[in-house]
Amino acid sequence: MHFLPEKIDEYVVAHSETEPELLKELTRETYQKILQPIMLSGPYQGRVLSMISKLIRPKTILELGTFTGYATLSLAEGLQASGEIHTIDVNEELVDFQRKYFDRSNYGQQIYQHLGNALDVIPRLDMSFDLVFIDADKPNYSNYFHAIIDKLNPGGIIISDNVLWHGKVIEKLNPKDLSTKAVLDFNTLLKNDERIESVMLPIRDGLTISRKK
Image (cartoon, rainbow, N blue to C red; front, side):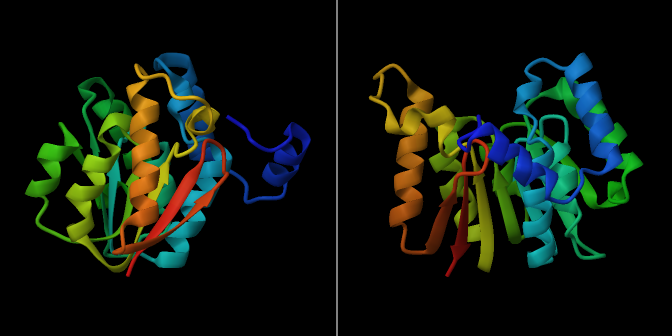
């Protein structure tokens, strides 16, 4: 979903950092072999995630929703040399696909895959995090926030994807549309929770950056 005029969007992409070749290959294979390839973060958002991670220089990253690993590798670019990124997904069929690209990158030994429901996995991770990326099933967005907020270090960052949800957040709500309702509730939560400060960015399908006070 693009909220900028197409030509402006193309100009922004053309004048941003170039997508790494490995991620181009990952994108091609995802579109060739994986269902719903539109779930990829994509080159522009990937460079945004990379830049935020490089600015933070996190020692620990948590990602909720791996898909084929595009955002994982983008975020890993900012890790400290001894840092770790833990990524959680429920799709067992994608584990080997992800690992193939992780191991071809410079960050393979720093990326830890977790298979299962994030709400079950998060309590088992005995660590705190400097950066969290939420990009999983929308109905659980608020639950994910509550699960990770106490594991986020002071000054830590949460990046939440799809917060504009294809523009549905400003349309009349269909009572049967549970995902849009969940995104609306989540956006209100981020706005009102006094433990964080947030700014929403109209990047692709919407990104909110939240900082723990």
